[in-house]
Length: 292
Image (cartoon, rainbow, N blue to C red):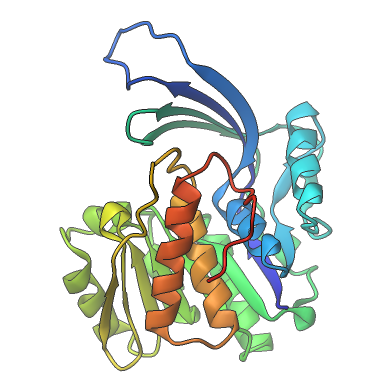
């Protein structure tokens, strides 16, 4: 199994499940509430860990009650946190999430009061032990330095980069990654209404990079280094329960396949299947680990 490091954030998620999404200024009773660990990078690691990969998280953490909740969950999934930066004060990022029971949609209000994981922290990591390195596309100036160091010191180490949101100068990071994972939200913010033309545009700039794009109910799209476009329909479960983290699960599916040196189209198909399975359940723990 692969030795995988993800650099990003972990959050405490406070999740309210409601019968239908409220109107502005409406008072609504939640059907139920749960607290869980979240965050894009750690969600992806939790999925990969269940397939037997050796997973490590590098991010900022603070030793307070909510931080302990996060750490306990990561330990449950055997995710190593040795390379985290433990802050002396602050509050772990918290996401307040409303899930609509009728269609599984999720609406998120996010709060954070914790410094980002930075290049100084990253320099302490022994990258020589890794088979795959994954980054959230955030904290661009510091992430740029991390990517540059990795490519210089370990040019053969595969790197994936999640591009979820439009951030200033984020395009500076693209050239250092072997795999780019774009969200539908980002593609729309970039000015494209569908994935194919966006991927073709990006391929012209990055011909040696595998590009993937999760597209919700329509599945996902990808383009390989030869410029071949692929589409995979979404895996439709009997009932959509919870779409929270479906994109993170899609990313895990891509990484899972590419770690096995599978082709772009196969990675896309497996990522869509895994994301669909996740949408049929609450949270990320599979009762039975899917066969991909």
